[in-house]
Picture (cartoon, helix red, strand yellow):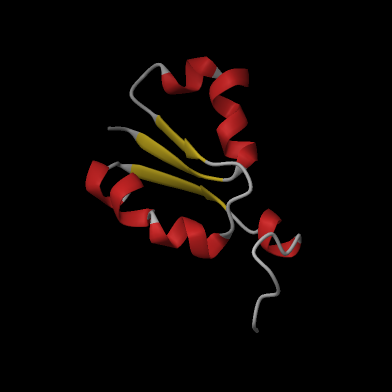
Length: 73
């Protein structure tokens, strides 16, 4: 396993628009509308359990949009 790309719809879209990026064993774990807390819940099964060499995390866009409600600071 080379790399895992964890993120939201932007990351999810890379599988369609850049299929060559995932041809060499890289894994896309983007889910549309996901917020950072939701990504943390799936961090172990979607990333840690795969033992990747590199992890790319695209997070925060949907937090700003309040997709799961207001965020406490």
